[in-house]
Image (cartoon, rainbow, N blue to C red; front, side, top):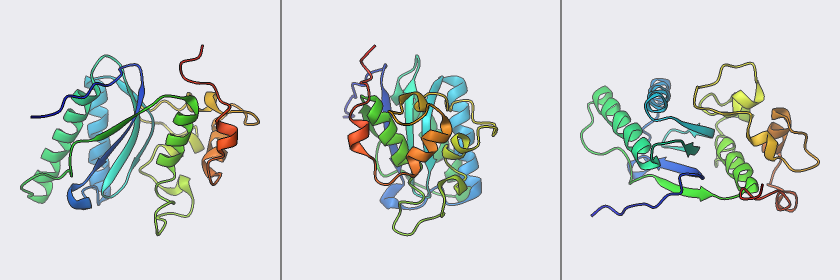
Length: 199
């Protein structure tokens, strides 16, 4: 029997999806484009917004908040469509994902900053960095923060995270990018930020 998840519709969630046995299922540019197309389709059908995303070769991370549709329904649509597309392209039989998606509620402004930073740093925090600079990785939301003139996906909201930056940061996307490049996360600064539940 499938365990039912009780998710808070008012919260942001850090969602991770992995390939079965950690195998690469987003291994080509075409795969990445198809995954993006499916996210766009899911957003058009069941509106949601992301604060951050990163598509890696064998998994992806998103920081998501739904609107009127449950997270489970959105994820089911995304993963079902990608499975069908992948199976057709590669003549694959059987499941491609390791298990159901992992979702963890993010309950504070510092949490949103820390999780988004973790997501954006994925390409350079691997054992062998994929790129030398975060903005060079094309399958992530970070380039849209770094270069605000870039046309971003409809589901990406890049004007939210900067408002949560604590002093002495300015409330700009450039400051947010500086925050993402700071290693490690400065918990003594973040702990003084407001809670999500505060007015």
